[in-house]
Amino acid sequence: MPQLSDALLDGRVVLVSGGTQGLGAAIADAAVRNGADVVVTGRRKDVGEQFATDLAERSGRQVRYVQADAGDVGESQAAVAETIDRFGRIDCVVNCAGLTTRGTMLDTTPELFDEHIAVNLRGPFFLMQAAIKDMVARGRGGSIVNIITMSSHGGQPYLAPYVASKSGLVGLTRNAAFAHRWDRIRINGVNIGWTETEGEDATQRRWHDADDDWLERAAAQQPMGKLGQVDEIADFVVFLLSARSGVVTGSVIDWDQTIPGTYE
Image 1 (tube, helix red, strand yellow):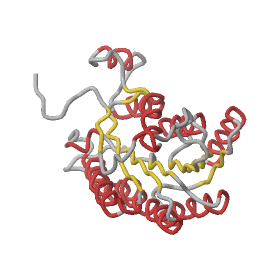
Image 2 (tube, helix red, strand yellow):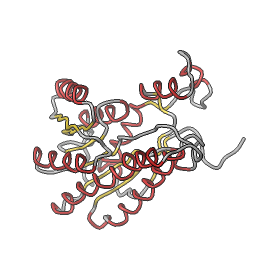
Image 3 (cartoon, helix red, strand yellow):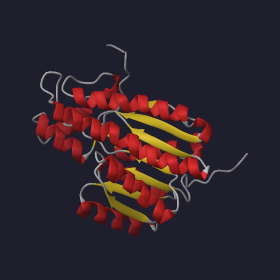
């Protein structure tokens, strides 16, 4: 049997959308620790360039930042093109950028709905399209992981447009995996649950009137005594991107400590 290196992405080229902060940054960090060269995208040039510089210095790997809004199809496609131009190929993609602004069935405007579709569904679709074209042309396969959400099972009333867009990403993940399985392109998704990030802290304070000890109280109410941790999720994403995860494709895996369909 072939022996796989402990550097699970040794020599791979990985593009992470929304890769300059939060979970995306943790995934980029895990990828370089596992031997990959990485391109990260994000909207804030100052943050992105500093993150890429710091990560390259820490890891000794090549890390590039490309300014791109996940909701802009042209910018997403340009990020893929720039990755291929710089490295000659693209081996792996992680769609991590996401929009979580609140809206219910009664108060969501067409504009808010369109924003969610643009960032959470249309952007990933066309970023995948551009990457898959390169993977098919080279005939060497590849792997893609879409970061989705446990809310895709139904979600909270105040996340109506978010749930609609992310549920679409579940279907897209499976459809693309089926369409390109004979190209040896594996495409999977991860439904992440409540996760501890700076962005989540800002969300809780903005939308839910959270105080300074909200995280401690929230963690105490979870079965494992903590919220999801970005470094743990990032390691799992790297595993799914790598050959270590074998033939797995078209799977949307719940990464959470709640179990849909169960009741107390």
